Length: 276
Image 1: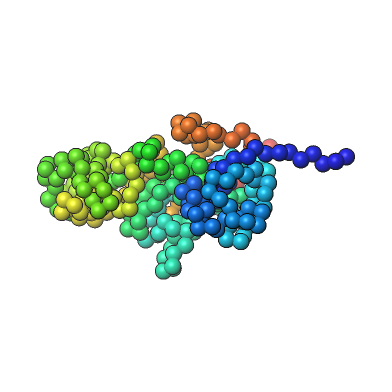
Image 2: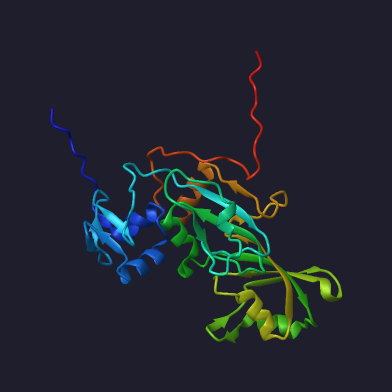
């Protein structure tokens, strides 16, 4: 009996590769512009439609496209000070990816970055479409930071920070500033942004002659950094939580069952025995 070939629908190459966790949509667009992606031995074009059954490679290395779309994974990582948010670092500094759990399919895609001196919440997913939706400026998702500052913070400075300051890459402002107490060089504020430009929190405070001595991201959209999650540790989100996030962001959640990940944190869990 002849083997039945199942035809897949044709989709834009950016969407297929992002969904596979190759990279975020923005990164794949860049790879295509640079001619680094090949389809059936020729350089792929931006916007080209593929089924995923083609021979696809990145920088000459074959890419594996899953037969069925796996369930996307999402985890939270508590980044400590001293780690960089890039996958590799030319200076040999430790990266956030070294502590993440391994995957049988795809790879982890970081949702935004934190500089080496900033700690706190980072999200990672295996779905580039989800990563793109969570990072894209048009969705204006909130990022909340705990900031310890040095310097005299007057009501006039706070008003400037909320109404807007012209930075070298355009105007910026805090959506909200909450004074959470402290004295002298140990005064803390919580601030909220709706974008993720490079070092934006620090640059805004510097623009009003105030130094940031400590910076921690405590929330990204609906995800709050729990106090029990220690620096260098991670936790998976349950499928139902991820499904609700997809619905909230207007994305299609895959119906096919994929390989499931772990549930909790980067700490090893003790196996339990059944009672007889």
